[in-house]
Structure formats: C-alpha cells, structure tokens
Image (cartoon, rainbow, N blue to C red; front, side, top):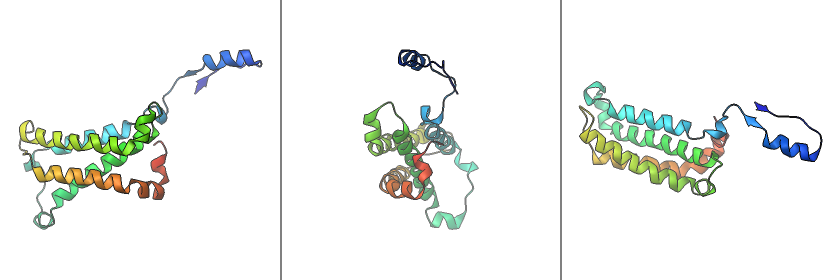
Length: 158
C-alpha cells in the first residue's frame, strides 16, 4: 500500500513522488527470504544426530545419503540464483547470479561438513558428502535455465 498525496501539476507530482511511503515490504524487497530459510533447514537437518536418522538398508546400497545431500544443495542454489536475479539493488549480483550462488553455496556445504565434524553431536564430517553437496550446486547451475523456462514462477517473487 502506498500513501500518496494526489496533486495535479508537474511540480506537485514531483512532491508527490518524494512523499510516497511504502508501508509494507513486497517480496521484491526481500528476495533472499526463501534462500535464507532453505539454508536454515539444511543447517538443522545436517545437525540432527546420526542416531536419530532412520537407516534403511536398501537405500544405503543406492547411496541415498549422497543423493539427499546433492538434492538439498540443488534446491539451495536454485533459490539462490532466483533471489540474485530478483533483487534490484545490485546489477553485478543480478548479472552474475549463477556464479555467486554456486560460489557461496559450495563453501557453505564445506562449512556444514566441518561443523558436523567439530560441533554437532553424533555427526561426523564426510568428504564425499561435500562432493555430493558441490555436485548438487553444479547441477542446479547447469539446469537452472531449463528449469526456469519450464517453471515460470521461478522468475517471479513468491
């Protein structure tokens, strides 16, 4: 909702434009919300003690754990690219959305693995999890152009 003073002359219109007040924040003003929330979900999921995660033998044969790591980081990078492209404050970020998303998500995956090895109780760091995280990041970067064409809502604010 915008509160505006309605006037008729050009000078008064200039005053009107200067006096407009945005009283709520549309999604356009907070494009990183979905990215931040998903990164928080990843942190929480990766901090769950290993004994609390169900073990299903046939899934271990398929390296299901690695697919989950790749999948959650795939989603993170998709959200991150989308957020970078929707933000309007920095044209450099908008133009380099994919590189920035991948360039920040891979170290985040590494940091999570380090935290699993040092801070989280009942968890251990796994280099192959980091590789899976990174693979998910690269797959998202490679497929984002195709996905955003198939799912036009990725180009719009939530």
